Every structure is written in structure tokens, then in C-alpha cells.
Image (tube, rainbow, N blue to C red; front, side, top):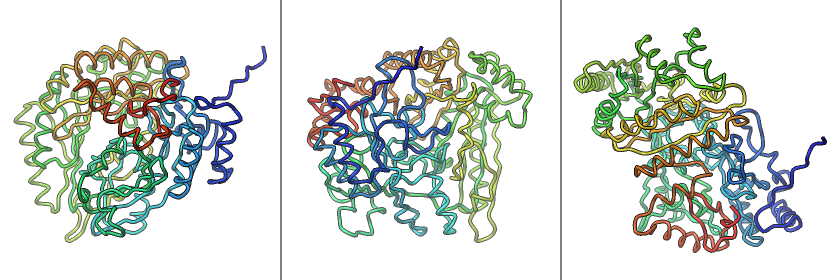
Length: 553
């Protein structure tokens, strides 16, 4: 049989003629080389070298999970973005905004509405300003964590920028999704100060002190005068953010990379409680990453290759390493069941040593059989630490970005991907422990390895279960697992802080106080700011009403 030709994907309500006309109008703004007339080319290189747009790790194989874009437009300047949205409004063309299009584990550069045109901002890659004195940067959406770090190194600034596990993503994009890094400034949405936003009308707004023309306070004081609107643009579709200010930390004089472990599965709640208390007191200044035996084992394989068949072998055969076997392995290796990684930072050697004494004392009092280790680094007298001279670790507590963690995607074989389920819990640890014990069998029964990536802050925990899978053969199975986790969360009053594009409406529906008052308010704001309904329809479950795009999604 001959190969079948796949029908071209078009935006909802568009025929080929209207679509071509709209792309021609966009090409007149950004140039023909910066238009993609389908989803096959034009994106930044992906984890497997692909340059297509959309979700490169699809889940499921039915129409409901098809988020294929119809094309893309890549503006270079704010002025081009303004003209692009005017054309989109004229044609009723739905666009889906991405900064660098990574969003790995949550849908990549795919949009909620199939056939959207990706508004790809990666060419807007200027570092507008970095202040060493005030420890901030102002950047455009195309600037990656790798690029900002390289700029700071080139200038010799004594700053430690925060970065996530993979440094290729956008600072703007990560911040707007409430993503996180691993220095004391790792809650990126909290470190954001000042925004520039293009509205659907083409109007440009600067938030906070940026509304005062040429004010030096824009990246310094977040509040501005009167109501603060920055929060409207986090995880939203109410505008297109073209610049943000982001705060960083000054390089410390002393730093310790710390590891805590507890022996038993049922000690998670106790571990969370004591760590969160230390964070609230400011003794531990960054957040703590907590791993289960499977995830811990991955950091040991390079130096212990004899463990590879036991840890990775089952997954390479389409199955999983059982929790029972991984628990036995952790006991054999002396790891403990739960491992926590965090950093301690100080302005002097004496302060660091005192902080570490407190950390060890508090943890051992709370959990008698806990182990705590600290690898200490001290600068010379009157000096600050240079992060580039410190050992590279799996978790970038020093703000040095990398992409070595991308290797985790291929643990089950080449061409793998991952999906993240990301619920929130309080830091008493009880709800997290109960939830973990309840859903632990879900991954094993689905045939996937249990990869726990829990992030402990002073007042909340993000309890991420990261599922590594082969999209070509395991997409339907991972979809069923995700939906099982989601159904359990719904039954028990648990919600994610962030979700895959396929489930945004569903997660939004959980926020039902006052007969969904928040959702109605957001739809009203959406209708006012984006009356044509062109910007990222369905993002976080926010739609313009009425919306032909929603009916077609």
C-alpha cells in the first residue's frame, strides 16, 4: 500500500485560502523566513534534535490529545509582536505564545487548541541589563538560563543566578509558569520584578514602577503604585510578556552542598516537617529536593555501573523496577529510603559552620537515625565564591546551568520523554505521606518506574511524580496513569500547581469555590483584554466567551 498523505492542520474555522492570507500578512511583518506554514520546522532544537512544533512527547493517540499547531510566527521585536497581534485579531487567528518552547513534561510548544499558530518568541533574545550592585537582570523571552549565566561569567559579576534542572529553557517562560530553580532565589515567580506586556490590542503596558517612564525603580520595587497586575500574567493568556526583571543572589563567601537521608518509607512526613521548619527560620535558604530510591539510584550509576541492570533493566524491557527491589537496593547501599538535597549559604566561614551545626542538630533530634552530610566550600579572606570552580552536581544549588539531566529522558531507550504530575501539599508532611502511600502502586501497576521529585519549601511541597516513557509505544498507557493520578487528586481535594495542556480545563474545574467564581472572573477579564479570543485560548482553563475555539478544541 502507498503512504497516506496527512491532511493539513488548519486553525478552527479557517479554510486554506484564509489561512494562507493570514500567514502572508504575518510574513510581511517578520519576513518569510520567520514563518512556518506547518508545524514541521522552525522551532528551537528539541531534546532529540527535532525542530518541529507541538508536543514532541504525545500522550494517548486519540483526537482529544492531538494538539498539533498549524504553523508558527517568530517576531524579533516588541513592535513586531504588536503588529502580529493586530493581524491575528483581524483574521481571528488563534495564536499560542511560547518563549523558547520547552515546557517539557507539560505539552512542549503545543497549544490547547489544535491548529493554533505558535507565537514563538525565541528570537527576542536580548539581555537588556544586568546590575551587579542590585543583583537583577532584565531579559527578553528568548534568553535562556545558559545565556544569562554565560553573560554574567563574561562580565565577571559576582552573582549567582538561579536555574532549573535544565538550563536551555527561557527565564521568562519558566518564571511565568511558576517554575523553580535551586538557589535561595529559586522561587522565580517571587523574584520577578517588573514586566512589559503586549496586550491583544497591540498596546504595550509596563507593570509596577515600569509605568513611570524611565524609572530606575522598575526592576527594584515590584509593587508600583495602586493595584499590582503582574500576577494576571502568570500561567495566563491575558497578554504577551516581552520583558521581565528577575532578582538574583550575590555570590556567597561560604557554601555547603548538603544531603540528608532517612531509612524508612514512613519517615517522609517527619523529614518534611523538620526541613520546612529550618527553611522558615532561614537556616536552610533554598528549597530541598527529596528523592526516593529509584531517583537516588540514577545519581549513582556513573560510579556504580554494576547497578545498571538492576535499576534500568526492567524499564528497558517495558516494565519497571519494583519499589520492593529499590527499597532493598537502598538498604544494601546505605542510602536510606528518602534523600534530601539542599544548600546552605553564608557571608562568612563562621556563619556557615554555625548554620550547619544547627541543621545537623535539628534533623538528628527530629529523626534519630537520619544521616546528614555537608560538603563545605570557603572563599579566601574578603573574597566571594566563584561557582564555576565548584564541583558540578546533579542539582544546581550554585546556579550553574547545564543540560546533563536531559539524559534521564532516555532511561527506557532512545527517543524517550517524560510527563510530570505536580500536586501541592502542606509542610506538616502528613497529607503528602498519606498520598504517597496511596498512589505508590499506581506507577508500578502501570509498568512505569517510580521517580519521585518532591520539592520542599517553607510552607508547601510540590510532590512531583515524573513518569519516564516511550511516546511511540507507551503514550496511551502513560495517559491512563496520569488520569488515574488526577482522579485520585480530585477525590481527595488535591490540585496540581501546573499541568499538561491536555488537562488544563479539568484542573481549572477543581477551583470551584463560590460556584467557580474565580473562573468566571478570569473569563470576564479575558473577554475585556482579548475580545477576539486570539491569545492562547484554553491556557490554564481560561477562555473567552463565547469562543468558537473552545468548541473546536
